[in-house]
Length: 66
Image 1 (cartoon, rainbow, N blue to C red):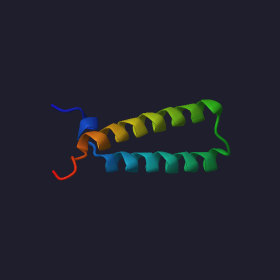
Image 2: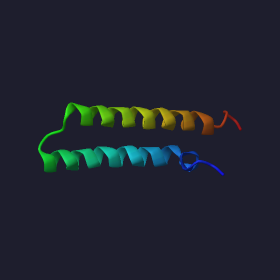
Image 3: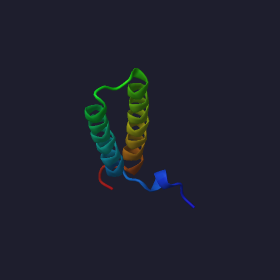
Image 4: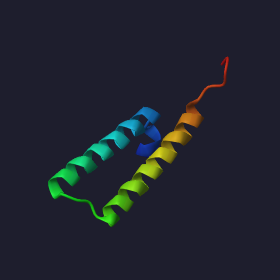
């Protein structure tokens, strides 16, 4: 059985990242500000999601002419 993250495509990760940024903007608007800790969590999540997305793009790329 595959881990759910293995079933996601690079486009799925793009969508997750977009939703995370949208959620953060809504959170900031409602709360008025964001703490340093909250920003660190966001940055960590974005970094990890971006790294996974890049690895998936490389692993799903087909060789030229294939």
